[in-house]
Each structure stands twice: as structure tokens, then as C-alpha cells.
Length: 349
Ligand SMILES: [Zn+2]
Ligand SMILES: [Zn+2]
Image (cartoon, rainbow, N blue to C red; front, side, top):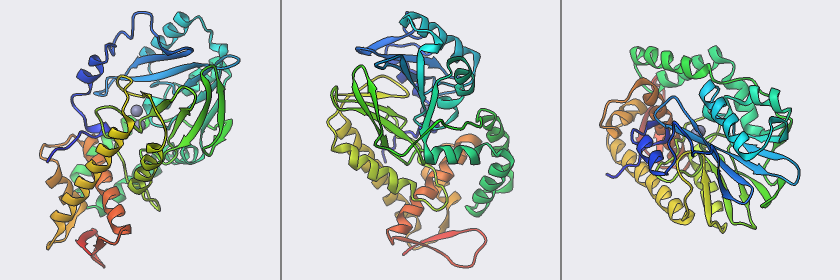
């Protein structure tokens, strides 16, 4: 079956990013590329396979809005400083920093940038809450271990995953937003009003920005040209169902230009949405086929779905992604848990 790489499991991303015409090491020669009047794409280097992240500097009626911050590395900081200079802006000209979501490549530099800019920090209520949980590292990692144990992951693998998770968790920082977003807010930019769209799934408080006048969508990690974003399980939620619902709502918008957080700008959001919905439908069908006539735990499903051996870090994402699919199927009445076992086994309902 055709399977598109998940956001955190892709191996060919660097090549794709290079195909955008922007090198992940040396962003466009002047450091910033004006993709619309007053909207600058700034590509910042990342120290992992994803290669780079795009942050956007958007001219407001007064000063600038910065959409996402980049990772908390010196390389990211220097690349952003260089881009700012190219645009002719100073740190203090940034009036607002908006995080599409709280993953380390999007928020890592935030504390340093807030200090420099004194900008107002905006993020969605659910990601503000999620970040509070993520920054209680020991508590969070113990919880994730428990989820994986219940999913049938062996203690040996859990120990290996913990090593790589601890590294990543160093890049989460406690942040309290000055403005807590719910969705529906409008930001007056030079390209017209940008409307905050709450698009949960990849993270519970992921947001996109939509400019109706210019038919432009700042897509965060919700929509990446060649990559299907990772959708991980979270308690008391249906992340996959929420993601699919948010895509169906976005299908109604008129969009000419998608500005993603990774890779080149692209267009064709309706086609992308159709492909992505069908990717998840395929994935669900494969899971249903695997547990038809024989119950399995989530780890066994992962081993069947991914032919290649996954590095510990990617394995964790795969387990949480399969759990998100099982949760979705359970809420649809298509699968059920086998009662009374410490490791949860799933069967067709
Ligand atoms: Zn992300
Ligand atoms: Zn990202």
C-alpha cells in the first residue's frame, strides 16, 4: 500500500526542502523571501531530518507579526537575525509572536525572542495547557511510558525511547501566553485581516491563519506538501477525528497560496485534503484487516504497518499514531478493547 511518510518519520524531507529552491543551511541569499507584499518567508535550519522550518514575518499596520520562532539553537537565532536585517526590521518592531503550536521547532526560540522583542505572545488555549504538561518532563515521560506499556511495547524499547525523548524534552520551555487564542480572532496585517483557525489534530491547540482577501493560508504543520502530519493519541480526545473535521472545514475556504511550516509554498489545498483523508481511511482499513479474526495490541499493529525498523524516537510516534487511529475507530464503533487485560488488545467490533 502506498504510504506517505509521517511528519516525524520521513527520511526524504531534506531533498524535498532543497527542491523548494531554498537551502536549509543557507536560507535565500538575503535571508528572507517576500512571498506576498509584506509577508516574508524565513527558512531556518533544523538539526534533524526535517531539515528546516519556515517562520513568517508579516507586516502589520504597525510593526510585524512573527508566525512561529524556530528551534532554540544558535543557528536558528543567527539565521532569523540575518533575515530581520535583510527586511530592514529591528527586534523591537516585532509586536506579536504567534505560535501555530508548541512543538520544539516552532517554539524553541520563543523565550529568547520575547526577551528581545517584548512582543505579545499568542497561542491557543489547548496548546498552552498542553505545554504545561509537556514541561513537567518527568511526569510527562512517566505517563508516556505507561501508555506504551499498555500498548504492548516492551520495557527494553521503552527504555531506549526514553533516552531520545529526554533529549527532545530539553527543547520545551514554560511559556505563558499574553493572549490565549480560541479561534476566530483577527489580526490586522498589511495583506488584510488574518483570521485564526483552530485546527486540532497534530497538536490539540494547533492554529492556522487565513487571509481571506489574498486567499492565503499560513498552514503550520497542518498541511505540508509531501508529508502527512503526525497525529498522536492524547487522553480524552479523538485527535484523528478532530484533524479530519478540521480538514473538512478548511476544504470550504478559497485558498490560492498555502504557506507551510516545512517545505515550499504550494497550492491545491482541496486535492491535498482529499489525499490526506484517503490516506487515513487506508490506514484505518489496514488496521481493521489486521485485527479481523485475531485481536492484537497496538505495538503488534505498528510492527505490521511499518515494514522498516523504526528508530526509538520514530517508534514512539508510530505507537501514538496507531493509538489515535484505534481511538477513532473505537468511537466509530468499529473496534473494541478486549476486557480485563493489562496490555490492551483490540478486536473488530
Ligand atoms: Zn509539529
Ligand atoms: Zn513542525
